[in-house]
Image (cartoon, rainbow, N blue to C red; front, side, top):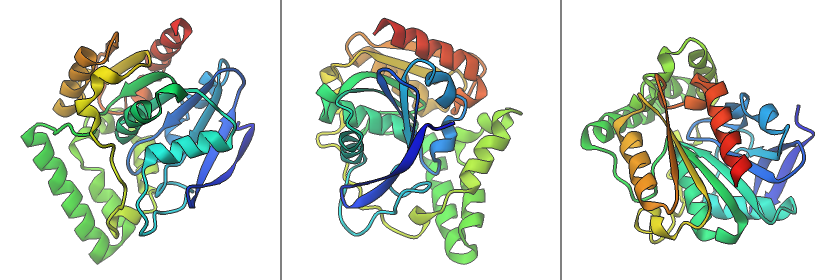
Length: 270
């Protein structure tokens, strides 16, 4: 349904994007190993009310891979919005995209109309030890599988990462998230990413967030996401927190109607 799509040549790279709808701009940012299709349950719905932009971050989907040059995802988004002639937007981010959305809001507060953060944590936040160790084991196993058996094998291993456990038990969400991750091109399995994080990290600057903020978390998401959601609610000024019952990490896929209603209701009040 995208009304326009293409590649923006910005910051020495090319970012694939799709745009639909009219009105106040709204940006959707996916997580690690995903792409624009992660937002299929939101793209057309939100486009009834907003000018919706979804895009592949550098290194994912159809966008170019990183080079040896350092870069930041939040600077890439700023350049993409500039290229599209957008001065200010609502920013929605999931998982790694949640971290990036928060970084963007702190780096470019005047371009951030509002924030919707879910399934993620601020940069500088450390997951609880048990979750962190389990996730690290999966990542190491995925890297090793990539070297010995290729990208598909690595992606299969990555599906075992703890945050996706509940999502993969959902009959609607499981085949979709599996398909998306199995289509991940796999650049990160073979390269060190020269991405530069926000400095100081968002964890140390949550009180500086100016944009109205909606935080959403699945009741059964991993411990890091639950702790991170509570932390952001406590420290971001006037933030709202919504917990969606019986859902895990990819709450927008597992309960799309509830998720969409929360987001649209929040945005209607901004």
